[in-house]
View 1 (cartoon, rainbow, N blue to C red):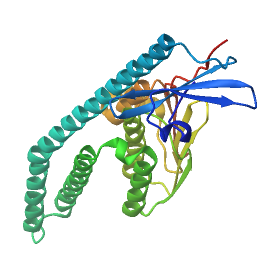
View 2 (tube, rainbow, N blue to C red):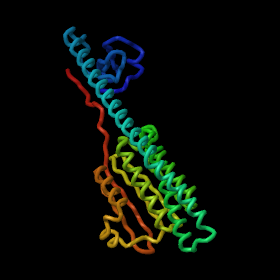
View 3 (cartoon, rainbow, N blue to C red):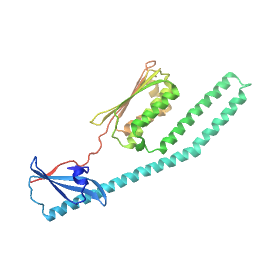
View 4 (cartoon, helix red, strand yellow):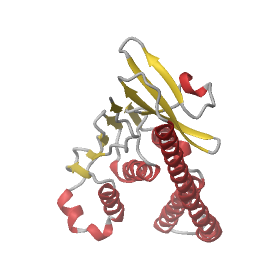
Length: 302
C-alpha cells in the first residue's frame, strides 16, 4: 500500500523498515519512496511470514522505491514547470493588454469626458445622453479589462475556486446593490487550476450579463459537489429574462454565451440556460471530474 510518511517511518532514515503487527500476526515491510532527500511516501508490503527477507529481495524493493521516487519527483518537477510556463504566458498577455488596450481605453475615456463637458452648455439633450452612454460603456470596459489583467497576474491555484467566486460575488454586490446569495456546498473542490478558471469565467460572465441586461432584484449562486466528482454550478435571477429562440437565432451577436458553452464543453460538461421574458434566467453548469488516485493497492505475499 502506498501512503504518505507516518510516524513509523518519518523518524527514521533507514532505507528499509520492518514492523510486526501482532494483532493480525502480520509483518509489514515499509519501503520509502524517496529520491535524494525528498520522500514522497511509503510502500507497505504485508506478509504472514516473519522470516527475514533475503538480501537480494531487500535490495530489489529498495531499488524499486528509489525508481518510483525518481519518477514522482520528475512528474512534480514537470508539473511545476508547466504551471510556471502558463503563468509566464499569462503575465505576458497581461502586460500587453496593459500597455496597449488599457492605455487606449484610458485615452478614449479622457477624450469622451472632455467632449461631454464641452457639449454640456450648448448641446442637445439627445446628443449629451448618447455621449454619456458611450462614456459609461468605456468605464465598464476599462473596469473589466483592469480586472482581467489583475486576474491574469495571480495564479489560479493560489486563489482557489471558492475564494475567487466569493470575490466576484462581493464585487457584484458592491457595484449593483442587488441582493445576491452565495451558497457554497463544496468547500474544497478538487479540480485542476485550468478547470477552476473555466468555472470561474462562466460564473463571472453570468453575473456580468445579469448586471448589464437582467434588471434583477435577487440573484442566487450555488456550488455543489459530491464524493463521486459530480459538480453543479447554478446562477439564477428574477430579472426580465429573454426569448431563447431569438437569442439562438442571433448567436453571432452573443459571443459571451457562445464562449460559456465552449468552456462547458472543455470541462466535459453541459451548460443549460433557461429563460423566458419576465420570468428570470437560470444558468446551470454540470460536469464530472475525479482526480487521479495515488497508488493504493495492497501488495501482499506469503
